[in-house]
Length: 75
Image (tube, rainbow, N blue to C red):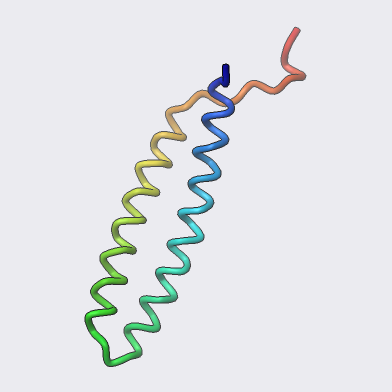
């Protein structure tokens, strides 16, 4: 059975992925702001807000998780 450390690792990997996605969305938002298609700006802003809120919830979850045990800590 997998433990808390494994779950924490999954969540940390998910947070890294979300940070990359947020960076991509911020670049898309800048591109949309410079174009004439204001609908694209609205869509990019909405997606960015959604992903930032998701990242915030994920970071709160990670902060509440106990730190993973390191094998060398075992007696």
